[in-house]
Length: 459
Ligand code: SF4
Ligand code: SF4
Image (cartoon, rainbow, N blue to C red; front, side, top):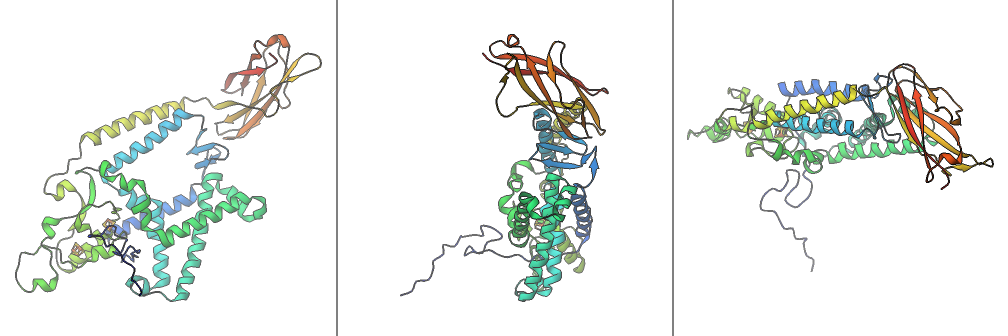
């Protein structure tokens, strides 16, 4: 006796991308080319160009955005940060989070629909390529594309993903470095090479297969929506008062009347890249892409009705009230944000033009010389935060004997240099195995710092 697999069917739809039996419901959103789509396309093209150019644009000797985790070196539009600059990094991150909170309180998930790289690349690069390659099989969604078209699509997606992976890596090491690596042998930079192919694979999986699931299942921002939004935030919503009772054009001919403007054509659902029905109200899956607005406006135009049955509106205004733009959170967020930005800028502009850090040397902490003196090897890292080359001179206090192999140390704009000092100290200089030696580093322009070097010696 053979038994059929038993499925416990959910009483209602659990997820827009799941079939009742738990399999993936593949979406083939129908493109609605309306005014919002045209605007989003312009923004998307601009952003794609910007995402590609940012690692190549140099400001103050560094890429406009650099996240060099390996060398613990970060740059944002001319301002360099070290991970040790905790207050600056903390203020920066706080400002980013508050900015997101404020934006969401005002205009809902506008970021998701207009600016997020996932949406931008999926909707304005991968999907258009897919529509082009798969043609009608894509648009219908009911027919499998011929194998050769699938192979071509995969090949094109791989090339695009490889390009994106190179761009992504450029944010971590800089555009020119990635370009140089891509011309050289993989053996010269195996880690970078492996990273590019791992990222290419991940991009391919995301844009060819995972797609809207990233927004629905993986992205934490969508899940925070319920706390970040309120009834006065701008969302994309269906005007139920105007649209209901919905009824198809055929039903209306019966003449029972009492119908609203929604002709139940289903185009808003067919256009939705996350597969939801906006007429069911605000849902976590909605990425505010405005595709349903364009789809519905086209139907309204064809049926001689006014546009805007689905539109940008607050829940309050859709319920017949008035949107309140001034609310506790829309006042508090910018005030706190302004304060944090002022603190951030004050700290940034008040920083010295260089930063000196003591680096721990490897090997023995000190060396006892035959003549009784104690040798310490002091190493400093000097970060030049200016956009000009600087020469840093190292000086020892009077009476302290030392040897400085390279002095001054020349550091290029926005770069780092290492200063090495051999200290020769008498045993008497140490108390409990320690002695503090003030070492001065200056650039002769505007930087001078006395670093208290903790020399070590015998107890
Ligand atoms: S409901 Fe409308 S705005 Fe929301 S994701 Fe779907 S198409 Fe985009
Ligand atoms: S596109 Fe407009 S008219 Fe058609 S089902 Fe959606 S809301 Fe109703």
